Image (cartoon, rainbow, N blue to C red; front, side, top):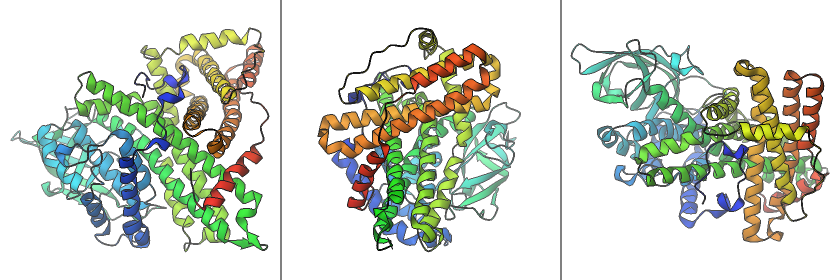
Amino acid sequence: MSTSTKGGEFLIKETEAKDIFIPEEWNEEQQMIAQTCHDFLAQNVWNSLDRIDAQEEGLMPELLHKAGELGLLGISVPEEYGGFGKDFTTSMLATEIMGAGHSFAVAISAHTGIGTLPILYYGNAEQKGKYIPKLASGEWKACYCLTEPSSGSDANSGKTKAVLAADGKHYILNGQKMWITNGGFADIFTVFAKIDNDANLSAFIVEKSFGGISLNPEEHKMGIKGSSTRQVFFNDCKVPVENLLSERQNGFKIAVNILNLGRIKLAGAAIGGSKVTVTKAVEYANERQQFGRPISKYGAIRYKLAEQAVRIYASESAIYRASQNIEDAIKTLIAGGMDEAKAKLKGVEQFAVEAAILKVHGSEVLDYVVDEGVQIYGGMGYSAEAPMDRAYRDARINRIFEGTNEINRMLIMDMMLKRAMKGELDLMTPAQKVAGELTSIPSMETPDDTLFAKQKSYIINFKKAILMVAGAAVQKLMQQLAKEQEVLMSISDMMIELYVSESTLLRVEKLVSIRGEEACKEQLAMMRVYLNDAADNIYKSGKESVNYFATGDEQRMMLSGLKRFTKVDPFNSVDARRTVSAKLIAENKYCF
C-alpha cells in the first residue's frame, strides 16, 4: 500500500488503483471477525428487536456484556488492555457488520467509540490501566457527555463547570448534558466541562459511583427506540483530580478528534445497515406476486434495487479507501517514532476531510436505501409488522449524529481551505492552471480506447470543475465566503461526488486486474452508472455556485468550462442497471 497520500490530496493528485485497499481483499482472519459479528446479530439481536425497542430492563447492558465476552468491544483495543489490537480497517469492518443491528448498533458504537476511545487515546498509563480492560470486556459500560441544551453544533459554548475543591484533591462538577447515548446504564462518563472561566472545555473521566449524578427519564424518539438516551445532571459531583483527561482546556480538541473518528465509523455502520436492507428488499421483491409474476420482474422495481446497490457499492469503495489511507498514515507515524495512541489520532485527523465526506455520503445512501425499501414493500412497507418501518425510522438520526450533514458539508470546504492557507495542500497552482485553460482552445484529443481510460479522463475533468468553481469562489467572495453557506455546501457536494466516483473507479479497476473483465461486469456497470450520474450532479452544484457569484462574460466562460469538464459520452444506464438488478435478483441478496 502507498503511504504517501495526504488527506484532501485527492482533489489535486492522481491515485493509482494498485495503491488503494478494496473490500474484495479481506483476509481470512478479517472475514472470521466479520462472521462473528454477523452471527452475534443473528443469534442475539435480530430475534430480540421488539424487546430491545421496548427497552426491556437490563437487556441492552446484557447484550453489550455478551459482545464483550466474544471480544467484540475490544477489536481495536491493544492486547495489553485485553483487546484484539486489530488495525483500523479491521475495526471498520466490524463496525460495518454491526451497523445492521438497529438500536444495538448505536449502543455498541457509542460504547466502543466515543465511550472508550477518549480514555484509550488521551488517558495516561494509570487511567488506561484502570478503565480500558473493564470497558473492553463489557464489565463497565461507557457514555460520552458533550451536548447541552444550549450547545449542540457549537460544542465549545457548553456551560457545565468544574471547580477545584478546597482540599485540592477533587473537582466539583455541576451542569446538565442531553442526548446522552447509553446514559441510562453507563458506569463511566466522559464529561466535558470548563474549569473556572476557561475559554475551552476540559474532559473528565467520571464514575457513576462518584455520586452527584442524576438522570431524567428515557427520551421518546422517532427511531433507535432501544438506544438509551437520557439527560444527565451533575450536582456537586466530586471527581478526583487524577481523573482529568489529558491537559486542562484540551477537551475541545478531544471532542473534535473523536468526532472525526465517529464520522467515518458512522459511514461504515450506515453501509452495513444498507446492505441488509437491500437483501430484505430483494427477497420481498422475489416473493411478492402481482399480476401473476414476482414484482422483481418489473422494470420500476429493478431500477430501485440496482440504484440501491450502485450507491452502496460506491460509498463502500470510498470508506475502505479512506480507512486504509488512515491505517497507512498511522503506521508511518509510528515508524517515525510517534506514540501509538497519538499516531492513531493524528492519522484520523489527517483524513478529517474524507471522514466528513463519508459521513454525509454514507448517511444519505442509507436514507435512500431505506426509503426505497419501504416503497418496494408497498403497503407492507408502512406496516410495523414488516422490517422496513424500523429501518426507515432508525436511519433518520444518522444525518444528525456526529455533526449534522450541513455542518459536515461546511467543514469539508473549510478544512480544505485551511490546509491550503497553511501550505499543507497546494490548491492555488492547479486552480490557476484550470483558470488559464478556460481561455485557451479546448483540446480535441480523445482518451484512448482502453478500459477505464475514458472514466479516468472524466475524473480529471471533475477535479478541474471543482478547482475552477472553488478557486473563483475564494477570489470573488474572499472573507465573506465563510458566511455563504449555500455556496460552500454546493462546492462540498461536488467534492463528495468526486471522491466517491474516483474511489469506485479505482476499486473496479483493481478488481478487474485481479479477476478479469468478464467476472466484473456488474461492478463495471455500477461504476459507469455512478460516474454518469456524478457528472450531472457536479454540473448542477457548480452551476448554482457560478450563477450566484459570477456575472457577464466571466459567468458565461465559467459555465461553458463547467459544461466541458462535466461532459460524458452517451451511456445506456437503463441496460447497466438491468445488469446489476439481474444479479441481485438471481442471488436473492446484496451480493457485491
